Image (cartoon, rainbow, N blue to C red; front, side, top):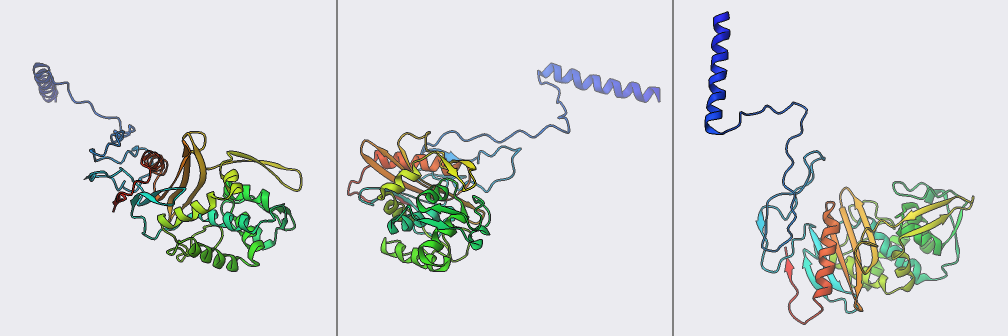
Length: 329
């Protein structure tokens, strides 16, 4: 036994000596509890960069692959991760850059852009809306409306666009058209009038339904029409709002649009998310008397914000020229 121990010690000494002679450090065993090294985080957005990493930290839950990965970007192609995207000139409606702009996607809460547009077009914003039991039962994001409460349409628009409250959307739609179903039909008809011919609405809030869909191009057209309404612009450009309940409670609402206050010139619009839709964002930016509207659909955070900044910047730097619009699959 002693001889075996001496042999093992001699062998270990020989291995360490060899490492010392070659200048190579002896391998260290990683502690069992240590996380694996995270992948490299992508920092470059150059059009000449071949993207090979998704930037997801190893410690976070797995994220869907970034569609920019593992391929060379085409000439003039922007590194847009969203599956569908477009940026248009707000004045003319002309597209300035497109990616899969006519593919059907679920809009999630960007649906509320159309809801707000119809409510504002109907006018009489100081009229009070009585909340029903049906309104109060709408789930997920809400302002916990209670049957018998009264709010003005004007006030409810802030709850709709800042808090993205589904119960508020349902109440506004029912008040406008008589029933939620009738309002959804009205939404789809108005979309057709705006040229959004590949859009179908089934509710006022954007909760998932297989037949509730739009496209980046259609959503941009709807957003453009909404931004032509001064009160809509006021609402979506507001970062914080004091929501007052009939019982005296005051709730501080914050706009979900992170571009407000962080991307100079941002004037709106609306975020959206469901699991089938993933991240959806309609955004607008005004600089030097030119405004552009960008839409990104089916993105994963933070790509929705990065893509929108990139599209807005591109749109502002490339006014309508009469040249072919860059389009990419």
